[in-house]
Image (cartoon, rainbow, N blue to C red):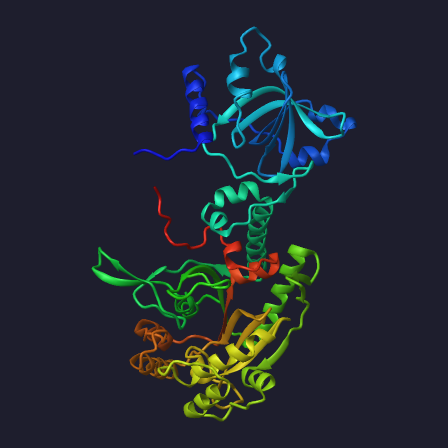
Length: 505
């Protein structure tokens, strides 16, 4: 199969053949004994400590080449940063044979991987550099990286910003836009901090099935697949809630999972069909305890990433200092529209939608109508962390009835920067009530609501064995990372976001 190669790609392949003809392996298999990294060298070296840096071994990708004839100044990028190499021909090739110099050093291209050993010194211009004593070609790059402009410190000031290129070729994006890598380092730090918080409080991390016979635990359209061995349709999970609750039935007090979920729905700046959610369930707790625990966790995360509870998000400053505001969903709608929907039936809610110029589907019920009204008129107004609490029972088929307020349930959603970040309940543990709620969902499905929940008979059976009072929560990790790293698109916090398949030549 032929390739359409650019002139640069053709030249690089010709260099590759010359190396191979000369017996130089451009892709050696042997371990390369890296012992030092750019950031450590640059932060730690001084003339007083030069004996500690008399022999270093580094490796990385060639990012710039300054050819001075018999001397090369080369900057390489390792996993920590960029450092300069001073490469002199008479030291790399001390004999008469300059084949290695002409083919490897003079034949270097931007993007090649090399390794060097040598000692650290400071150049006359004051730059901490490595005086190379040996140089090894570790991997020949056959495709040129996009050209970016850097200052003398190696910082990019003319980054490649085309999202089609950046998301589709993330491997190249990470090389040429260093701040992108920093976002994903912070993402891992966020997840590790959450783990430390939960583990430190006695929670147990578990795994639950991704392939499910019944897509339960949320109102969403699932992806459908087929299990050949069982000759049965299966669904990619939309949530792991019902499995985690089964574990509470089984005797665990506090379980959690970072769950990869899949919902066959729209894509925009805050939605991706494949996404990560943290869910945890804790026995003998309620949604008031869950609000307090969520505040503690988010405050800890802000401090871990920023060193302060004031976090920049776009042009705003979001304050993660507890406690957060609390307001019922019905009061939130009234606060933002002036309309009291608390006593309205489905027909009355449809009239409200007309009054607010909201186009709503004909096949959704009372709960979805309230959700539409809140989403269109109120959700975006809550920039600072706010718990929207006490939802109508129709909106929450897995949630315990409110202990004081009729027709409401003990549920909250956490809104930050106008978007839902978390959803939590006092969990419904009455098996008879739960069966009736599932049956109501079936009626909505018959009306054409393709996001209505399936009846999970095995989950109902588990509740009949008895589940203790429990509180549970789901936190959208991708949206949380967006907030804490000040990213405006979910694609910027996913290493490989979904895109249309590329048409390749």
